[in-house]
Structures are given as C-alpha cells and as structure tokens.
Amino acid sequence: MFDSLTDRLGTTLKKLRGQGRLSEDNIKDAMREVRMALLEADVALPVVREFIAKAKERAIGQEVLQSLTPGQALVKVVQDELVSIMGDACEELNLAAQPPAVILMAGLQGAGKTTTVGKLARFLKERHKKSVIVTSCDIYRPAAIEQLKTVAAEVEAEFYPSATSDKPVKIAKGVLKHARKQHIDVVIVDTAGRLHIDAEMMDEIKKIHGVLNPIETLFVVDSMTGQDAVHTAKAFDEALPLTGVILTKTDGDARGGAALSVRHITGKPIKFLGVGEKSDALEPFHPDRVASRILGMGDVLSLVEEAQRSVDHKKAEKFARKMQKGQGFDLQDFRDQLQQISSMGGISSLVDKLPGMSNISDKMKDQVNNDHTKQLEAIINSMTPQERRFPAVIKGSRKRRIAAGSGTQVQDVNRLLKQFTQMQKMMKRMSKGGGMAKMMRNMKGQLPF
Image (tube, rainbow, N blue to C red):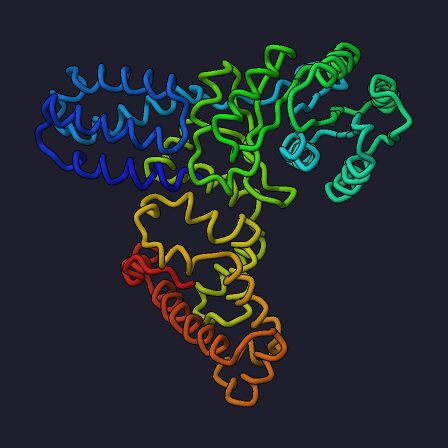
C-alpha cells in the first residue's frame, strides 16, 4: 500500500532533507511535487487542497526556515499533516456497553464484509479476550450464510444460524436474545450487500439497526476503488449513524487514496485495515504509523507488537541459548526462523515496516517475497533430520531426492544451501560477540533471502 506515493514523496523530500537552507521558492516547488504525488495516489481533491495549504503555511514559517535542519523540519511538517488528515490517533472499538456489545457491519457486495466479520471476531477473541457470536442477515445469498458459518468455524467464534426464509429483523432479534441468555460479550452482525446503494437496502439496514441499537456501526469498503470508496462511505453515513470504517484489500492497493481521504470527507475514523486474505490479516489503523510508512520511515512499533504476539518465545529463548553456547546454526534452526517470520505476516510484511526499506530496489523487493520463503521451507521439510543437522552430507543424489520431494529443481536446493551457509557465517559472528549491530554491518544492507 502507498507504494507509488512513498516513491514520489521520498524522491521529493530527499532533495530537501540534507539542505542547510531552504527558501520559499524551493518549498513551493516541493509542495507542487507533493500535490502531484497525492493526486496520483487518488487522494480526493478537497483533501489535497487543504493538506497543501496547511503544510505550505507551516513550511514557510519560523518552524522550518529558522530550523537548524530545515530540510528535516519540512519532512516533519509533511508527516504531521499526513497524520492530521487521517485522524490524529488510533480510534479503537468502543466495547464499553452492557454485554452483549453489538457491532453492525455494512457495505457493498464484494467489499469483503463476510471475511472481515471473521477477522474481527478473531481479533476480539485474541487481543481483547472476548467471547464472540456472529450471524448473517444476508437472506438473498445462501452462499453468504454458508461462507460466514465456515469463517466462524475457522476463527472458533460461535455462529448463530440463519436461513434465506428468515426475515433479517427476526434474525437480529434472535441473535441478541441468544447472546444475552448465554452471556456472550460481543455480537457481530453481517448484513446484505448490493452492487450499488439503493433505497430498499438502506431501509432494510435501518430496521436492523433499530432492533440491534449497535454500539459500533462499521462500514466495510474496498480500498482499491479509490475515491469511489470515499463517496460510498459518505452516502452510507447519511443513511446510518456510522461509527467507523474498515478498509479492505489494502495489500493490493498501491495508491492508498481512500485511506488518506475517507476521514476528511466522511468525518468517520478508519478503525481497521484489511492487509491480506488470512483470518489474522486485520490491523488497527494508527495514523502516525501509517504516515511513517508513507514517508519510508517504517513502522517499528507495529513490528514489535507483531513479534510479541506471534513469536514462539520458548523457541526463541532456546535458540538464543544455543547461539550463546556456540553450538552452531543448522537447517532445523533456519526452518524455525522462517516459520517465525511467516507467523508475523511473512517477509514482505516485515520489509514494509522496516525503516529505510522503501529505498531498496524493485529487484530486491521481488526476491523478498513470501512464496520464496515457503519454497525454502518446503525444501528443508524434504530433508532427513540428519541432513538438517549436518548439511555437508547433502551431495548429488540427495539433492535430486530433496528437489523431487519439494517440487523444486536441484538449482533451488543449491541456492538454499548457499544462502544457509551465508546465514551460518553471520550467526557464528554474532555468537563470538558484537551482536546484531555487527551482523547488520556484515550484511551491508543485503537480506539473506
């Protein structure tokens, strides 16, 4: 997400970052470039106008021109204004209600509503330790009810059954009664989507809203529809008292215009980003962290939080002790590290959050992908325990067997062994002293994958 915007802004601000002096003229030139970058990212014109006006006003004031590092001060102005248009802070779900707290999901067909219900249920169960029940009021598509039933089973949330013969309002009343009786913390209600906004749809969802009186009414929208996403959110907000927006499919949206526009146009906060297909691919929306990512500064806080949640700490401690004792780094350890990375969203997710990684070449980005990590893991899985512990024994016939077992070529096995040898040398240097800083210097900016 934001790839094109990051590239354009990065190039523009890089020219100014190291300058000892700035003038009004080169600030105006820079702001012109920033304006073009935002428009190319499909940010709504009113949002761009206000952003540029505020940023320019601050940029030609004392804050920047009289700074000891005016170029860096200008970058800070741009970052602050990005945060401002997206909402100054992360707005969490309001669950402060007499249980059950009801969350109503609205949106057009194809936006990813049903999948998002499952992701949200998992998020509330894992991060907030809530009991969750989900149900579908979409009586027009039998597949929608079955899909939600499957999704609920996957995330281990309770599913309240519904059928195409039921009335949506009856389903809403039923799930509410059941949740109260069973003392369930949160009810998430999926509603019918349409290909476009129509009066019948709005009338139905208003009735469901009236019965449920939800504490949160979230609009789910496909970020890849750009400004259309913003206009649709506005239309829904005029019919329903929305409390927030969830942007889906942001991993496929290179522009990010919806994320930068929706708060300003609708006045409603973005509460979550859908960042992939898996049930855990839902991130709370932090405007400050997103602004840092846009400007190529990474998002270390999210990376740390992800590590705390996903990393197997017992395995990590065991590995650390092994390294301290100088027992050596084998292919079993290498596979464990790959699995830890996968649990954190994969290599591409890590690269997106690491500072300075926006500057790496496209060729390097292509190499750093999750499919390649899975291939490496498959190759190691095709080895015997002895081969993992003593990779030196892997010669011609063994390589052919491993390649056949993992559905790869012998040259892929050779490449893995070469990468493993490089990784082994790094780990050896780390265990001798100097730690991570020394290893990073030895890597010289190159990733082992």
